[in-house]
Image (cartoon, rainbow, N blue to C red; front, side, top):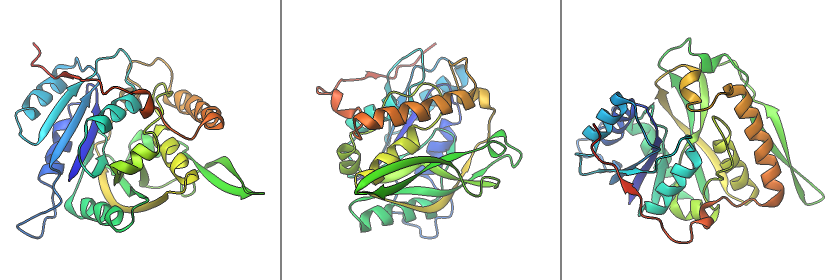
Length: 274
């Protein structure tokens, strides 16, 4: 079974995202077998009226389940971890709330992880709906892993081809649920925007999983203020602090925080809000 997990807070674009997953474009055949059996939306406590309206509309659908985990801060990792715990699918897709998917990319991602058991398939190219979007103008960073004397060394480097209309979708991944369980899910140490996606891939690579890249999606462009909801710091500051936190945490363990949920906590179901 194939399921999708989407963390969200105050993002009305969630409806467009889910529509593109359930009824993807570029379907050549009348029968499309890669539609998700369930879309699990983990809401971090949305209060914005357009987002609440979108969620209320989505919860009417049989293939959509909305779970509520209210919090003053948007902790993306925590919401995804809760989605993993709540999922039943053998294959999971992790999506942001502002991504427009297509059938070709969904098929490529699923085919890749079905072919190889220990693989995480990431979206290769993310195109902005606004070619002049802020996100395309700033420096991006990634990691490199080298082995010296049988000891893996992690180095943070500036991403090659940084000036590009497309960028990698490090957080838009498809993999087996068993892979995410083996990794301990996501680490929940991050505050504000940035690096929880690279952290997962870095830990996966260190633990022997293959990271592969394929497909292309559209990101519905928005301002940087939207990225750092409920955080007074700039996105560059939070991203850099999160990189440091990731490296410090890695010295202690390469396993995420999923294991701390020894008892599966039943979420508060999303309710109609006035």
